[in-house]
Image (cartoon, rainbow, N blue to C red; front, side, top):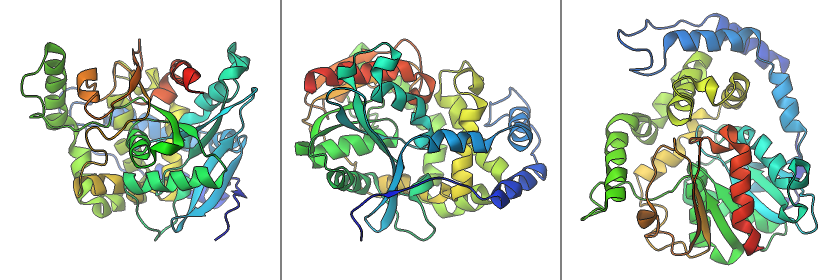
Length: 382
């Protein structure tokens, strides 16, 4: 295998765009269940509007051009062709920074954040805070997927990313992540601590066990109440993705409307949107992400970390992360463990910030706020 990255440009065939529009035109919607919209899942009228916009108005080529404006590469690693963005920083000594997305995300969610991180002076910041950003598509996601390739757990993703950074010549770097990206980042810090200057997270990959706190403080009790609601009402998607990923993949690989309903519901439930997804994330940003899953056919393989998680041990042991850690707690994050819970896993918490607004998709919803936190955390670690 070559250890030299190959430049990459995304170009979805015209025939694939035409096929998508034809499928969208033939969408068969279910009836709306009685009661409040969204009470039982994706609202039918909202999805009907999104599907029509996707079919008639959404400009995939414009989104493709946004991605292609940044340097992209592939590199053979762990028996796949790993896709990644590699954007040089503009400053006197940019710190290499590995950015890891999650599900149902993609590298599209980082486009605004990368500009903020690589060229802070352009946004009124200090060039000394610049990062050189490496943002891979997680193995099995988007452009790091080909049919029939091996499936990856979060642990294996972390090992793969350690090899990627070594292949790029980075012996010491920072790492940042949310959702599965936070698991990958924390696992990287546990398994390869010598490589990391520090890690920054916007989701805490701590155990979700209601019995883990015997005598909870008021703050811990608040978290346990949140956790109880989460475990009762919000993890149906995890059970199906983590136990029958292949079965679910049929419907979502064949129906673009089904795919948009499955992912769109998460954009609403997990963002700081006040009940309407577009209040937090534009239709174009949502559809860029959904379209990438559609065109690559990667939705089934993107479920694999859930299967691995439900059939193996927790990826990061208690006390397992000793490198400096920073955390940005967005108010509409899916779970918000208190610092006392986080400190069981992370032994060197250097920065803990409660953010004024934003949710689970922090890089998409609040790129300026997230970039500020990343710069502030890493400044003393350079």
